[in-house]
Length: 395
Image (cartoon, rainbow, N blue to C red; front, side, top):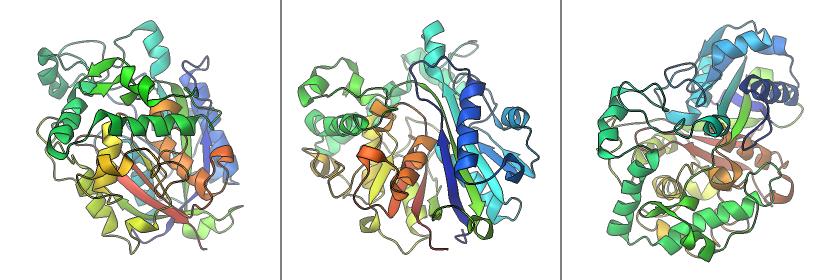
């Protein structure tokens, strides 16, 4: 990265469980808002990036891909891309940035649409992992087919292994892990778009239904219908932005882990590779970060990201978050300030980027942090992961 890529606008549709709008309507709402936010017109957009795009996942996990968006908006593009492989939910941000760095595009529209809530209204198996030959299910590859005969019908059963290992090796407790869910719920209370905004106590968390030990219901994210869009602009094109654009200071996508959720290191997954890759590309350090928007598809993943990224010591995550004060909006390392996916809704990756930009631009309303010049975004779990360090631009 030559520090030549800036975020100049963001947009997000309504976030509902479920929405009465179609995937197309949600996508158009988010994208038009982002383009307008950047002070651009559709004619300025010459690139589109999406993850995972139109592939074997299909609706509802990814109902609209780059080709569909190009058609919806009538875009004249120099480049577009999607695809399920790569560094997970923020792969589109990384791919779009690389297209600009390569000199192909000036302005790339990055988006992610998900309609799992609507799909689950019709078929409760819509988000489960598919067996070999199954017509339904989120993933129908041979990889997942190897798991399902052993009762692994949802990602929670795989991620629960990470939690069990952390409990066993480092002494993590349910009372400590629950602070992530409680923090997200407290932050969601100040987010008008959040799915769950009612107060939650530690007792509420501990009494919630066990899904896959030691992960409870409130350790799992909330399916929703939503679309999020981000505008990436080349440095010379970002100078005319109506506000200080957000610089992509560094990205991380390193991966030395095997492509199998049960064979990777269970205490740090791919996150440690990603973190080392990202920090090697910047002079900034973890103590320069004002907030962290970290993947919380399941609460244990947030904790693993915190340790891997150096926000606390390896194995010390439980003690760091104990009581919740350090990770609250008034704490030393605020996390998931919009409620994350545990309470805000599973916008699956780009929602973290959207919130990071809102905080840096001072547009987060009641949940706005007193100081936010630098934000860390990380998304993914198991063998999928990517991160980005964002800071207030100086052009």
